[in-house]
Image (cartoon, rainbow, N blue to C red; front, side, top):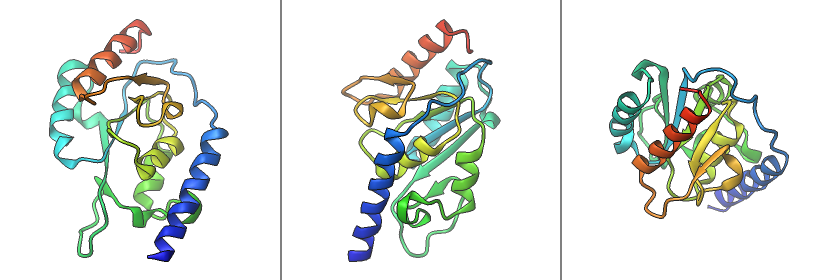
Length: 171
């Protein structure tokens, strides 16, 4: 228990340090093709896939999901999920799954988490995605496009994202 607390504090400290030193990724100069989605609720995967493929010109095969869930013994490893055990001290990424996710050059990363989650925020911050979007209440500094919606409705985030990406001529 004490070790977990120390680990979480070291991740939090490194996260705050990375956030202060954050350099904006490459500006979005091309049309969006590859999309990354970060979630903390696995039941939303199918709904969000349907929304993104119906309202945007994205194909399901071009959307990659990464879902945070609490670690439980006996869970099977999957590319879809990650747990706090896959992150080490000072926000180091211990699994190939996380390393591949953050190193991949996505055109757009959408973080649908509805409250502050240290682990999804670290992944979002470390991602090489060119453009990042999410809810303002989660962490304003993480995103290039922030949407304020007190109900944290995914449809509102998608609607605003579509509006601004259309204005920027990225979709």
